[in-house]
Image (cartoon, rainbow over all chains, first blue to last red; front, side, top):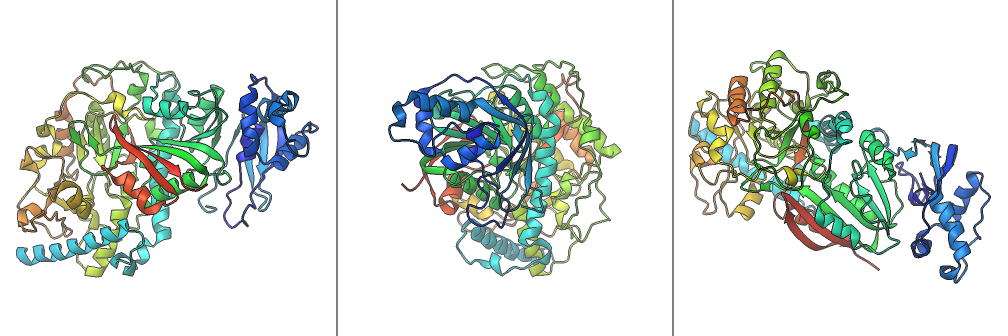
Length: 125
Length: 499
């Protein structure tokens, strides 16, 4: 699971307050870094879509000191260094084993072999 | 006596028709809403639906996933184009991605795939795709975060209209305003013929996965399959056939006088406890991989149950006529979007229809036409059966047994009533002999190669316009941009409204 994916994920356990399921807390047992070809335009376009705080939090929870500023700085589109660091965090770091915890309900969803399983049981749904 | 009975049926059909109409108009307070059947409240229906899908969608995909890994799959061109048209840097998700066929089409966008089936997702993962396991009905994504969503050959696996709506609404929820969704579903109307009913079970045959599908359709379906022994030999008997603990809420008056070799009605249709007779049946069935079974839609089941209660009809085995008729088809059940690729180009003669064979049956079964009122509008009041020619099998004017109390009526456009026309014929597998006969007569003779054990996958095949209507009437947040028919599928592209 890449951190870009994580940034889109929200717990859907029923009965949460609005927005209560985001962001999922990562508990990582195994993390891997893998190079991915850098595409500046691609990364730049992603910026407005991201929940920035959640991204920084996620990066730090993986033991990687956040190299990201508290907020995307104006003019980031042209800032290659910024974009490369963002690229690295979003796309090159993967959680292979661990779990994702719903912040409100505490419900844990497993990640195994890089694949998060977010199914609810029939009772939960 | 017969006349009174028929009049009663006509009245009942009217009620059913009204109820169907109200089902399709979600805002209307129709007669349906006044029904309260403790046996089929919405939670009960949800449970039934979940169980059906568990047995006949999820279980099948899980058990057959291993066979998909070396399948040369073909991506639908239209879907490819849709993906390639997305702007670079877009966030795109494939809901029901299977083995991830579409996740590598456009490398300029971020492709995420998800599927209910872990086995399939594993395969996609091994290819390097970014995937997760989740439920279309409860998508674990925040609102409005994707530029594009695709749903290719997925929502036809949902067994009730409400679930299909919910699936679409969930996908609309995660779409950004201005974002687009493409949905593909299997069409009732296939080339040269159509499914006779909308809710079907389609057998899956593992031999088919051994093939390497070429771009062109197979010229013939006889002997065209090469059966290569697979290392992993999944025994359906072990995996699929298990004690069916699935409680049948729909049929409290279990008809013990009419034992069946195979449970046909929903939910019993899902019961995979295979008996000796069934084994023979499946063996014969396996000889024709093109066969499929019909099931009754859960919506219809619920409706009928409530109508029955209202009418205080005396009957045994409400679902006597839910005996699943077998109808062969030229389609392979193997999909992941590939039905079109496997569609046999040869035209089907309706005389091949197994229903013709069952003319010899002693006990004809009757069932209401599916979506009768809708039929009126779509078919100009004509009988909605796939028998535009050779109607010999469609109308039977014979004695109706007590237990066959629910009769379907298709009013013809002129409103004239012709008793004989009111009864839509379904064959019955009450007698497995007839089923066996039928299956054998279908005739793919080089079937020693085919796996006699088949998994049954549930589909709700869509009529023309049904998908569009479903969206227009129930998902106002989506605006349909285009719709088309593509290789046996109905396809729509819709946009999330708003700014």
